[in-house]
Amino acid sequence: MKQWCDYVGIEMLASIFTEEALDLAETLGLTTYKIASRTVVDQPALCEKILARRRPTYVSLGMWEESGFPFGPSDGRLLQYVYCRSKYPTGPADLASMPARFGDEGFSGYSDHSLGIAMCLTAVARGARYVEKHFTLNKASQVIRDHVLSATPDEFRQLVELGRPMARFAALCDPEGTRNPRSVQG
Image 1 (cartoon, rainbow, N blue to C red):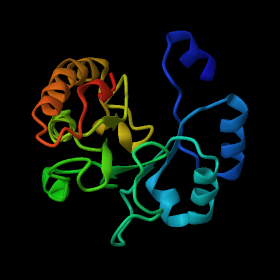
Image 2: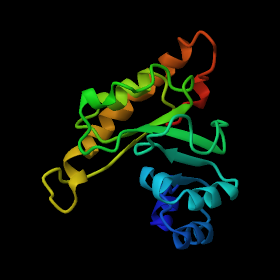
Image 3: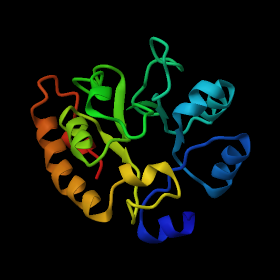
Image 4: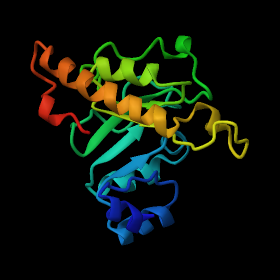
């Protein structure tokens, strides 16, 4: 998979669930890590070990039920928190606590488990710098529960085509100048 990502010119990103996976990520030369919601709750010591590597790390908080952030405030570079709800699929009412302005509330990005792309675009309009969305070629597949809520290639195309200009406009409309349009990834 790493060779394929290198070939097409995208950075490989993988959730680290075990110490062996962390060692593999290091061996593969991954420059950025992701910590899944379940790992935050079930393996905080592993999370601390991942963060100690001093690589940019996205930490999903879909299962985090405590107040505040588990590993201190986001620094916007090495530690970035991802707003998420670990419900499959996530309905609009489940997202009532989505930040009104990403960045202001400590979240840099959004991990989506809803149907379609509307919630992703809402997060982008609210300043999310990145969006994580599952991908599928077949929404009817029953292999895992995620296929029905995953995006097809056409939905991903729509998300990018609508989301990029929306992100640039949201950055331009930012009165505090905290969202530089040049920092919008994509």
